[in-house]
Amino acid sequence: MSETTNPVRATAVPTRIPALMNEIRRLIEPKQRAVIDSVPPEVRRCAGFHFGWWEADGRETSARHGKAIRPALTVSCARAAGGTKDAAIPAAVAVELLHDFSLLHDDIMDGDVTRRHRPAAWVEFGVPMAILTGDALLTLALDLVHEGPSGAALREAALELCAGQSADLTFEHRTGVRLSECLRMAQQKTGSLFGVACQLGALSAGTGNRIAERYTQFGRHLGLVFQLVDDILGIWGHEAATGKPVCSDLKSRKKSLPVVAALSSGTAAGARLEALLGSGDVLDDDALAHAAELIEDAGGRTWAEAEALRHRALALDALAAAEPEPAAADDLLALVELMTVRVS
Image 1: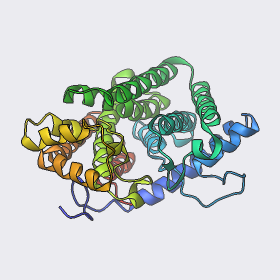
Image 2: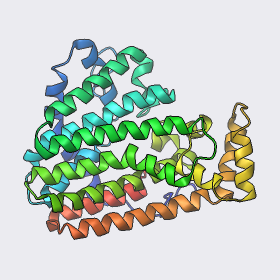
Image 3: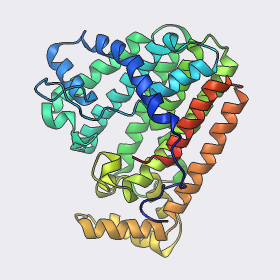
Image 4: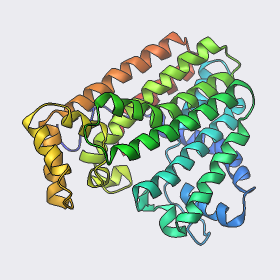
């Protein structure tokens, strides 16, 4: 597979995607800005910088914003379940705030210095302010959606996300991490947020728990597709597409899914990879390139690509079982293709 093709399969992102993402940003940004205006000025400035709204000194910027995938899922699932876009706005904003809370803290824990093609918030504002900003975003998210089944689902997702991040950090210092453990971590860290994004959308439409659960499963499987493709791009992608240095996770010896698949393969390449990652030596560019080759030789990339396609199929099965409204289903199918393809 050439470097320019999709890490899972080569296909075009549906033409609906750019218009859909722009529509979602226009829909949620007024509410998002309104809730951010309620926090102290220093926190507001850090949050706005992280979102890509302005520079560190407060000047408006044309920096690239986040992809708005999760709120797009919330709004599209609301419409698919027979609801309206407007009714889904609080949930969509809450999901995006929860996501950005996790990114602010994740960058600090991982030592990542770039986010969305610019310095990470902690680099510009310092670790204490970035932590406080993340805390504020979590509080705002839980305040937006705090009642009934939706509030319970968002709180549960927040706790599950933290559990996944905790496992991710622990795995960095552990040998013998099992692939089943790594998949569970990905389900907690990524699948939980995708799942609740879809669940809250369905609940905002007034649907029953049975249908809402089908949308939840659609989102959770889609979250694993996202994580698997993200891990593939993190090793074999390009910085222009990912927004952060390629192989940064590998350099910090993160147990990403392709890495654990390779280490669990029982192959000679897997054994050499284990020795390389366990050596304690600094991984320079040559060592990182060699590690990527070993992961591929051990079957880690092939497994991750196949697993992404398997969860894509499971996501589509769950969506079909929910019997969505056709027009909104088209948007959800376009988002599935985006998750699978993920080209810049």
